[in-house]
Amino acid sequence: MLFLKSSTATQLWIVLVAVAAATVKAEFKLPNLPYAHKDLEPYISSSTLNVHHGNHHAKYIATLNHLVKGGGRDLKKMSLDEIVVEAHKREDTGLFNNAAQSWNHGFYWKCMKPGGGGEPTGLLLEKIQEHFGSYAQFATEFKNAGNTAFGSGWAWLVYHKAGGALQVTKTIGAGNPMTTPGLVPILCMDVWEHAYYLDYQNKRPEYADTFLEKLVNWDFVADNLKEAMESSGRGEEL
Amino acid sequence: MKLSLALTSLFVGSAAAWSSLTMKAEGVSSRRNIFKGIGAAVVAGVVNPGNSNAYSVPDLPYPFEALEPHIDTPTMKIHHDKHHATYVANINKATEGQEEKPILDLMENALEAGPVRNSGGGHYNHAFFWEEMAPPAEAAKTKPSAQLEELINKSFGSMDEMKAKFEAQAAPGAVFGSGWVWVCVNKKGDELKLVGTPNQDNPLMKGVTDEIMFPILGLDVWEHAYYLKYQNRRPEYVSNWWNVVNWDKVSENCAYVVENHAGVNVQG
Image 1 (cartoon, rainbow over the protein chains, first blue to last red):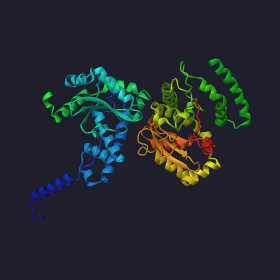
Image 2: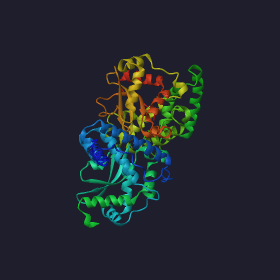
Image 3: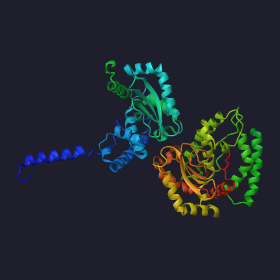
């Protein structure tokens, strides 16, 4: 090494570091919120976002990293999506809860935006009308899913890869529809009490109304739909 | 209905005045005993209009602010007046037209009875919960009976060990999401068991735990029970909660379930 030109030595080190990095995956990181903590006010307070993102979501990620570190080599090579599905298959509750909650929250932040809400447009609206009859019917079903998820859970809009249908579903705890093969989540709403308690207390239905009327990021949902359609061979419908 | 309630309250009030001379002052226990007899009938009589079912939200045995600083006033108000009230409204809806039974009697088969599991469980659990707590100054004067202490030592080693195990069971990783943590007497009546249950399930319900058990102490770890004051800091809520546990009431619960091999009855 000492006899090589310094630039070659540097190149060798770069290669070695790159190889090392490629084989040892970096830990999962807490994604930044796509907006400032106060940007969803008055619908969701900065206090809620501070705790929800900075404490709850952060803790899931930290615990996930801890579990992956202590887990098998194969886990360390997996993406978050893959760990969620694998943990579910293995019935590894601790790993599943933390991986899925990490995934769910990262997705949830993007499902909202300042100045969001209202009705979708374009292909997304068409598909909603096709599978629910009307946007109003979708909204009723989606909010009902959230309001009837007893205890802690999530409301989802999912895309069925086989057949292309849209459907509302709900999960409990850390549940994620990805664990059912062929389902692609395109929208979610967190109905764990921590998502709304500081701002709405027991009034979950008011939070659900507000989520659709003032917060939902339909652009993100439309992108998710587009991606799901392309990956299931329906790209020509776009 | 309101007039008879007022008259009964007057009677109860005078009875309270008399009994407070003979019992401990500031008696949370004395107030409870008063309400047990007459109060139960009165409270049960304040029904939802137009609904023959008798479930109702029992009054708290203390003011909303009484458990400060450990459980905050807004939480007590919303928890009792909104959450518990919703369970009561829903269990009344679910049992409309059915034979009236104490809520305890609905617990055993709750898992097979649809909405009874969630709403009936919710009503029982909360009615049970309010009674086992007391203002911190009062709670500090209470202690486990000899019987309870013996069972604690036998089952857990010591009170401290029981508390440590309880706190571990109450951690967010152990009861993930919404649920309760319970200290129960086993069916035989010779041991205490610690168990966490999801949502509004409780160990009185057949199928929730390996065998039916009888709670003598329970803690609500749904986020609504602590979020306004503690947010994500559930462990802090749990460790502070010991300050409001009424060990006299827990001892009463223990004596009752050991003797009767049955669950504690609740008001409402």
